[in-house]
Length: 64
Image (cartoon, rainbow, N blue to C red):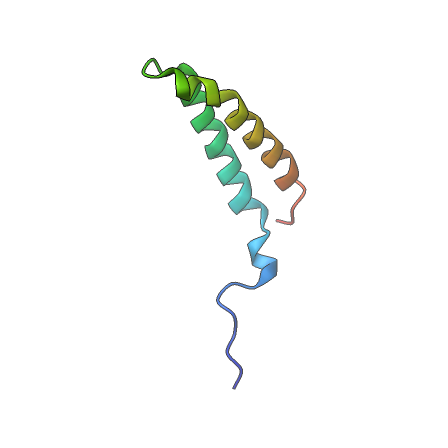
């Protein structure tokens, strides 16, 4: 009897997982942008939003 892998490679690249993570990353970037506590978070907010948006564009082409 063969042991099956815990998560096959096909399931790893599913749209619903990665689109959700990308959306959360965009939300974190927006929260960093509007927070009044530290300038460091404000400084890194645009790159975080940009990475989240690019990840969303890429993952929107994954399989359902």
